[in-house]
Image (cartoon, rainbow, N blue to C red; front, side, top):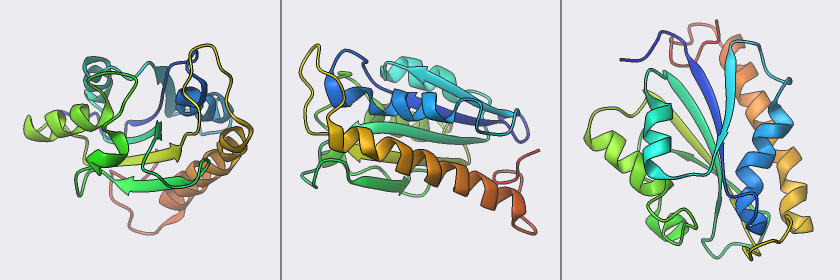
Length: 167
């Protein structure tokens, strides 16, 4: 069961696989920029690790790289609590059994947080040892800003339910 109002921002990725590290880069950009009661964590993106981090969370915003064919650096936002993630965008995960599978397993087990939002940034290069490509690195600030705005709007919205309201 979720702890009332617990909010987690979770950046996924492998820091040694180029653009795959973008979720972690967004999490790092958000550290210290969000209210103290919003937790910011990073993980490699293995399904079991994601599932464990979703326990007792009321709202989760997850950031990961994707490869749907859109231009590199394109930021997508999915309401994963309402509908499955498009498997085509997340099917080629460098995590193996990754985000798409973790969310769908959590949904099937009744463990998906009431509010689950995924920000996915199109990657360009996933080679071992590579850094973020410039276009994907530029998307880090954009997505961090969108997440800050989304959390701020949730706080300011009159009548926001416990899934949305920061405490």
